[in-house]
Each structure stands twice: as C-alpha cells, then as structure tokens.
Image (cartoon, rainbow, N blue to C red; front, side, top):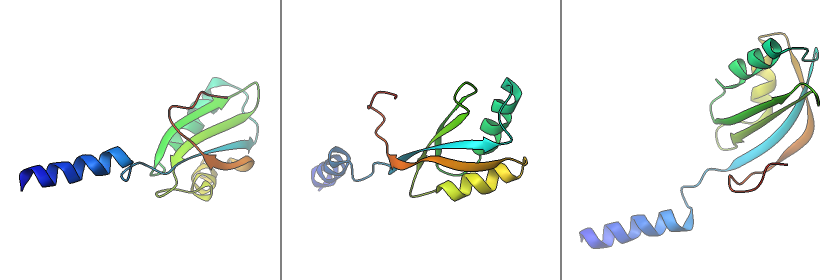
Length: 105
C-alpha cells in the first residue's frame, strides 16, 4: 500500500500537477521612479501581495516587472497595493505565462 501511495505522489510531481501558475506582467508607475529609494519602496510594498515570486525594477526603462502566481494574485492587486504609497501603475505588457527556466528578456 505504501508503494502505491508513493508512486501516486511521484506521479503527480512528475506531471507538474502541483506546479504554480506563474505569470509575468510589466508595469510603469506615475510618478516616475527617480532613484534607488523609489525602487526599494515599490519592491517593499509589492512583495506583500500574496503570490508574488519576483519583482524587478528598472530606472532606465521606467518599468516594474513582476512574476506572480496567478492562482493567488492578479495585476489589480499590485495596482491597489501601490496606491498605498501614492503610485499609480499602468500595465505596459499584459500578463503572459512565465516558466522559471526560460531566459530573461
């Protein structure tokens, strides 16, 4: 019986049934980011949205890239969270599926 249960668990793991539904979305903010402190405040605030996996900011491009679990969060959750620090987010690139093993672009 133990062997059957173990085989079932390994089968689920192998098929990725427990894998996260990761999405990648790119935002820009108003007001614009002008310094490292702006980036840090955005990262500090956005990381508390449940399902957040990675947050990257770029002063040069004025973008905020967030990778999140779509089963736990949505872009509107980040927009709402950043309003707390008086930043309005605008989606620059709609959410797309993200796989951790894909190269960054």
